[in-house]
Length: 207
Image 1 (cartoon, rainbow, N blue to C red):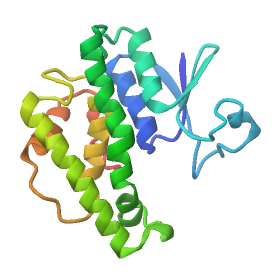
Image 2 (cartoon, one colour):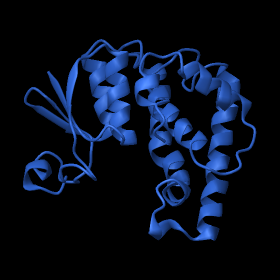
Image 3 (cartoon, rainbow, N blue to C red):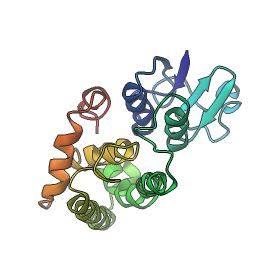
């Protein structure tokens, strides 16, 4: 049985949970992180020295880094429909997964922490405005990409990349500020709502 360590509200844990649903992969989950068991204990640090969730234990194999975890699960457990073996198609999936984890995440971090998490360290009005501006620029990139594909971020079919990107789109809609009209992003989010793991781990009221 696959064991997932991390609280279910974490966006990075939800990547793994949604992927498991897409793969029909059974798992057990343990609550770790803020509000639950500390990730700074020797027990957890032995699994991930970065003290971050998620971590998976697949038998004797331990793995951390959420995007790496979902690539591993798709590769091991029959996920070629999500993570194709063809080098070009796989590279396109990887490109958008990496974009979500780096460029997109960095753009929304300050605004999200300030406006949703109410972090005292993220309340500078100018910094929030700049974060929203950068976030919007990246969401326009996504909107243009979706216009080009007509469907999903890596192409015409749902792929592993749509899980992290979809969770970020959920965070976009769940953050309180005036959003510009991005019709392709809105339509994309509606398409994602048809997926079996969406209601449980993306459109579940948790931004």
